[in-house]
Image (tube, rainbow, N blue to C red; front, side):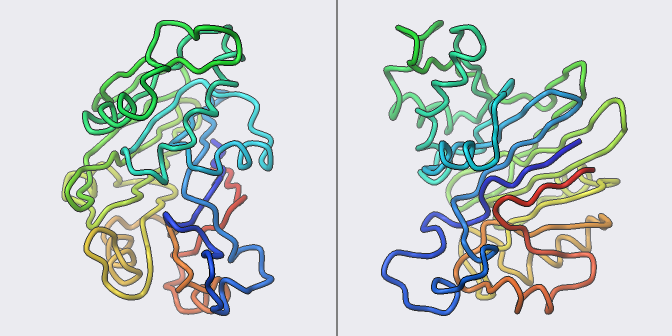
Amino acid sequence: MEVIFLGTGTSQGVPMIACPCSVCRSTDPRNHRSRSSLHVVMDGLHVQVDATPEFRLQCLREKIEQLDVFILTHGHADHITGMDDLRRFCDLIGGEALTVYTTDEGMARVLSIFPYAIAERPVSKGYAAFKLVEMPGALEFPQGTIRSTLLPHGGLNTLGLVFEERSSGRKFVYYNDCKRVTREAVELARGADVVVLDGLRPEPHPTHMNIAEACAAAAEIGAPRTYLTHLTHAIDFTEWSAKLPPAVHLAYDGLRLSI
């Protein structure tokens, strides 16, 4: 299984507009964060999680040339507004609508933002078409299984995802944009090889886990490796990497993991 971090930043991105702080002025590329999204490859099955405002640029940078499954974790702007650029992948799958797996809230947001793309097929080559489907508890493919669980994120729930590759038995967990990891989510993540958690900033936040909360969730799950994502400009990569527990790391844009 291969995991590609297309983006690891917050809704404002890092550097932030008009911010003179040391992280926003940093020359360390690991401190330059586009909005959070992920690409997972299980035995050749390409799964894209979310489409940020920088989605097109992320795909070009990481040479993403195939997309078989698209999952929208929730309908917030930093995760949904790049979906128009999925039009190219509609071309690449033969001019068919791309199935979008998401929550009820996610479906409503796609309908409101992209009404022109809700169709069985694109109106013409080069246009997007989406088929909206509620994400089930488990998506089964010949290459493996993607399980889902709901995570609290302020006034809505987001999708937490667990990928299990059939050939290798490897297990990868992606719990982004959440205030806490529920008991069900902890149990679903047991035995994971790698876990990714929302770890916004050092200070508490009403809808995201901060660094301490994410580290506590990582300890409870007990994976050998945990990565924190959705990081603000309060997190300098070198400084905070030295402060984290041995099994917890910071993700960065372009990080690739072979699991």
